[in-house]
Structure formats: C-alpha cells, structure tokens
Image (cartoon, rainbow over all chains, first blue to last red):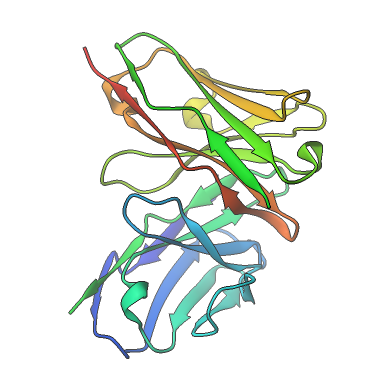
Length: 108
Length: 119
C-alpha cells in the first residue's frame, strides 16, 4: 500500500504569511493527488486536485505543485479563515485512497 | 445541487453492528463512485472503502476488509455502510463522499455521522 507522509504536523503562522505544506508518497503516484481543508466539526473541503488544479470556488491564494513522490500546498497570504487542518490524499487505479496524517495551521 | 445526507448519530455496544446511510441527490446517482472515510476524535482521516454505484462493486481498505460492507439501492439513490464487531476504537465520525468529475477525489461530502461505541 502507498503511504503518504505530511510535514510539518503543526505549523504556527500569522495572517499574511506564506505557508507551505509538504506531502511525500512512498512510491510514484504521478499527479494523482488532492489537498483538503478541514475546519473542526466540519467535513473536509476539496481545494486542489490532480496535484495542481484549483477546485472551483477556492481562492487563488491556494496552489499546489509537484509530481511523482513529492508535493506541496502553498497558501500565498494566510487569511483568518485558513487556520485549519490540511490533508493530502492519493488514489490509485482501483480508486483506493490514502490520506496523509494532516497538518494543522495555528495562529502564531 | 449535489447533496449527500447521512443518517443520524448512533450509540452501540461493543460487538454490535451499525448501518449508516448516505442519500444522494442532485445528480445521476449511478454516474459516480461513493467512498466512506472516518475520523476518530482528534485524529486524521481514514479511508474505509468505495462502491461503484452502477455495478455495486466494492473495494475495501485492508484494515476494514473483514468488518465493513458497502451496498447501494439505486431506487432510492442511497449507499449504506455496515460495520460489524464494533469496538471502542470505532468511535468516530463517518463520512460518505462522492468522487469528482475530474478524478477519484472527494468533491462532495455528507455531513458526517457520529458513531459512539460504549458499554
């Protein structure tokens, strides 16, 4: 099974900061990667799919990059609504999923 | 608009089973796979399995292979997740999610169903 590893686990930042979260896959997954945002008590929200495509309605300050085994999610200028937990997710040919363990973005 | 509405919270005793429903609306039900993901309190997201709503075929995560069953009823556009032999570690919020048109990603999510396992 493919393992997804995110870093860091927790990140402290201020409004306006540029924030980068990394996700590494245990084997080559091409661009079959998504990023989600989750606010406590709510369902996850899809932000990025196919590693770098922005989901409709998601602010352009969110961007994704990478392919193969290393991926990043970048928030160009952190806003108050962005303090949340972020997860990467990969899928394979059989539609099996694996999530990273999550990165919590906290207020500094 | 696409909606996934899940059944309400459940409290079960260890060893029992639970069946959570996910009713879809606003799109062609058989056109998209539906996945189940759970989240234990204070923990991350854990994928459980997926159902092909057209043919009913299923794929399960290894951790749940022996205990989870996904089924669907095309007449009511509803997917069911049945988890057996419950233990306290199964206390979690269970989500259904529909794949995106762009690939196997969770574009639409149910509101979540809290299942509490306690003696």
